[in-house]
Image 1 (cartoon, rainbow, N blue to C red):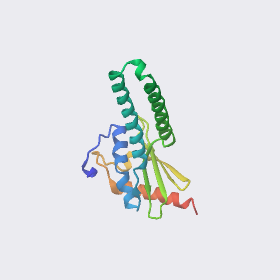
Image 2 (cartoon, rainbow, N blue to C red):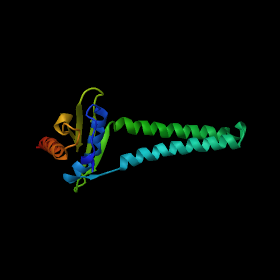
Image 3 (cartoon, rainbow, N blue to C red):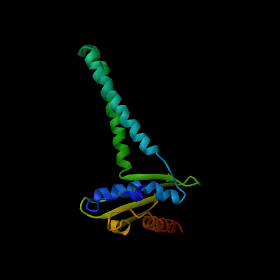
Length: 169
């Protein structure tokens, strides 16, 4: 479906986002199943902070300050703990765009980034404590009109996975 999506070639952010959206399909071809546990954890922590803030708003509207003081203090402490946990999750999983598992249960993590003005797609693939980092040029897997070339990107990622597997030997 995203092969039909035209991407603005003048926007590095759009190029990176289109490429990140295709990671799941690319790694599925290599036998990996995408795991959404990290995304679900982030959503759950974020949603719980919103619920706490909403409940505090309702308590503040319904009760006086003296009546709601203890609830407010406890809620603020819980909010701070959850926000701290969310910060740590984001800190230790910086730029992780894909997490997948193969049939044997081995975990594969892909972290990507790009600079605002530099059309280079930085990819770090990590599996079982080994990692390989590459700087890929967007023009290798986008055509001159702005369409994403899945076949070219699949070949590039396959080469990177081969490099990663050769590190174990």
